[in-house]
Length: 297
Image (cartoon, rainbow, N blue to C red; front, side, top):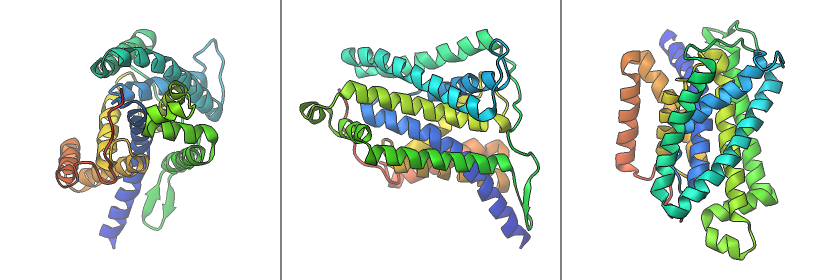
């Protein structure tokens, strides 16, 4: 019975961290589907989005201090605006060569990491949780309220995104543009505008993930490196460019990581998780829910 409780506890923890990976993986997949671009700077954007929200929560901007949720919204909006700006930069690079965009994302990551160190320093800071730190006890299972908050808000964001993409005129235009931009143009859809909205949503999702995770991690300029890599692995595991696949892959990667840490060793967590991903891809090269993608030009 105790072994079962430990397993359930481990899986719950994995779902919590997996929800974080899922949001960043969703960002990766949306941008890839819209422009054929793998955003290697997504971990850095996750980190920058965290800072853009937490500086208001901690009163680091001219002494102005807001609640956690107001700071959450501000951080998402600022990061979304940054996404719109970066879409225009990458659009210019795409006119030259798709490889320039890939190199551009790598360069962007380096720039953002070092810029945050220059502005805020390398040490970082801890963030107070907006909910109680006292665990919720269900029998022999303990659940942190912040984990419940993370999973709940992540689920709300995913559902809201799905409704937006399937029900709104703008969302349908984004899907059409991602599927075939040439045909979308002939139908009068503004493809570049759709891409800009996709970047805004993608960057906003990464920011949301970082701000939700801030109370359970140490906020610092290096916090995005591991998350970006794991989220990318989750996106690939689920099927790069597939939105449900990104969610499934991110959550699955979190559960795999938690189980390997709990039952094998936390020292080998990264290696074991990536090995399992590679084994899955050997049998399903396109990922669990993957589909063939057409290169964007």
